[in-house]
Length: 191
Image 1 (cartoon, helix red, strand yellow):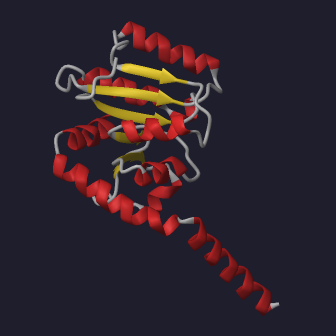
Image 2 (cartoon, rainbow, N blue to C red):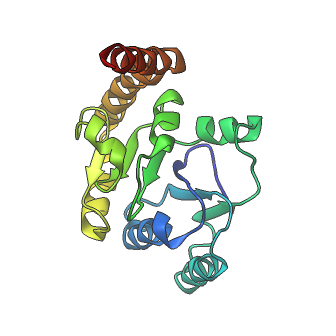
């Protein structure tokens, strides 16, 4: 149901209540008439069949079948996963609890603007309206405001993309490995 003119919000996370995909679907339902080109793509394996069924029931009850796609069988580090990121227009991470949120780095590397819950650990490395949009944890109104802001502001989209791409280079494996090596060297020299 996705057309190339649609604005695709990707949620790349296992289908689980902790990941809170239902929050985005509730926002979608509220703004589907004012933003008819908005689509949601849920990508991730199912870890809670009860929650998956709850999502499917919500989609059917609110006639969102043409607005939501769910893919549960893409393997990590596959070409298909990369293709999904490159085909999306934004990443939304609505998790209730998220120790880090590495998918935000994947989104930045894929030139996607990021909308993220304030519960994600990576938020400590983000600046609102600079390299991400950060919404209040589990707050439908806050997510809605930030999503509309992104949808209606192409200049902000470009700003988030450009600043996210700059920020993601600080997470390059060689840079991280060098920092870890420096920490270990410093600790060993103290002993």
